[in-house]
Image (cartoon, rainbow, N blue to C red; front, side, top):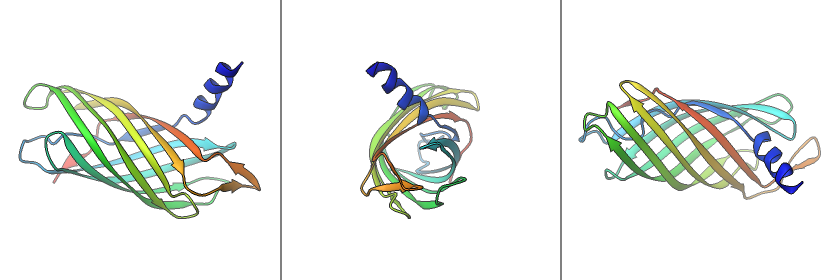
Length: 172
């Protein structure tokens, strides 16, 4: 029974995201990349959509600092805006020109947001490269600092967002 409840909790937090693009720069000298993503999910029966615009600064070939402005909106919930800032440890396997391979990332971060949505988070994901196509998936586990509620009902302090990554992004 506990396994079924845990499975249902995980599935209820399921959300999809588009983009977050290519995590490693296309050229060795490219140090900044950007991406655009959108996700959808639900909290206590209320659906939301979240849009993110991210800027990735590659400190080394294996570490990047990502800042993403976001806006979460939905019916029956307060709109939330803010910034996700994370340190990502990156790895890449495949062709030197970036056309074929796999990229992976993992790291901690902090969400600075309106309406008591400030949180610490950890995230991880993997992206497969085939020519110009990027497909992958990831998870972000958030732990909110403050108590929150919707319609007088407490919202859990921990939330997991699962996302699908589909191409997009670019380099500066």
